Length: 516
Image (cartoon, rainbow, N blue to C red; front, top):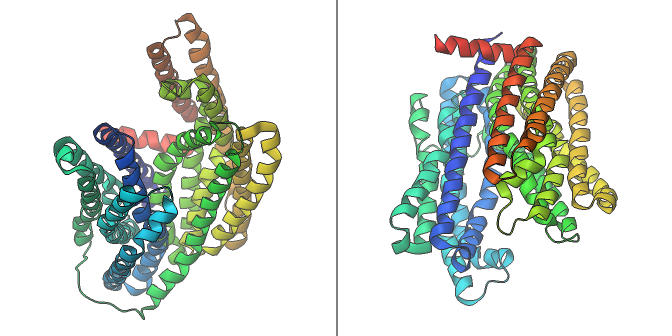
């Protein structure tokens, strides 16, 4: 096994832990905002102003970072490290100029943007939203710089600073909310948002300097790699827009169903996406620059080995997660959500949606991985077209399944769409790079499925059979859920080792070495 492959699990685990901690701090941030400012006039205005500031730049920045990583790899391989550092400075300055222009334009169009996002705002609230939006506009600059730096670092397989960037971001908020928030109010909160965004960027600078980055005022708009980045970014942006359209269509159709359908889909999506955002994103983040380098060197065997490692690790995570959600969807939703206005009917609706979303969890995770493979060979058009096909399939199935399954039909349509388009991506990729060792994926899938089914039977027995011996109290249900999941994870891990799942045994070997 190559040194690159040996780093995958370790780096992915580090990113996953950093993401989990960051999400915990983000949750604490939201709790403190609710505690200090409540849920009403000021917070509504703040969140609208933040949406107007962040929404477009986040989409553009993510697309930019996706295209920069393979370009950085190509430059280093073909032109050398110094040319890569020159390009880093150039692209940083170009993005800085573009974001400055966006801030200037944003200042003048702020009233129109607020009108679009919150047409119900009038009078003082409308004026406050404009004021907050204008105060927060520098966030665009810091987000742009942050995405460039994280792309540069990850192309060098330095994942720590980008992974922990969310931690100082949230800590800045928490410090403000625990100290002077009552004195400085909602205006201070927006200023804090700007400072937090700056912290997210600044924490990445020392690591970039250690890699040789030195800032200069160089700007070369005729650099062919700048043009290439802009050309590759456009299809990624369109693909992201297509996915947003998919979500909007689902929510629009759900609005015609009984009350609570949109919320059920929203909560179910958040739970399902947690696995993808924490674990699968961690794997693809590590794999992406490795793939880019291998394809740039035209080392097809190394690229396929890295891809095999990534896909099989995703299977190891998502197969048991799917079985676990199918069995524990309703008790998990009940334990974590059912209180106050969230009643038993809301639990039933949300858990039903979660169950049907989970059926596409493996496919949607693999699709994310396959998109990265296409991006690493600088093909951004195929994922965009695939995304458009996904929307078409989803919309067609929505209108069929919603008649028989209500909001759950919308969730099932999304899952079926993910499965079909993932298969199509595999077919397209095989045409581009030839044989991909599908046999290895199938063997890994079968082994993890066997282990997951046995794990599922044990989890079911612990929670529903053993649990029936105890009274139905919230704390008992929480402890049973923790026990069932903990035992399930242990059994799954042991079974994967016994079934000789290569990646799991490799992980166990690394754990043993780390203790020595």
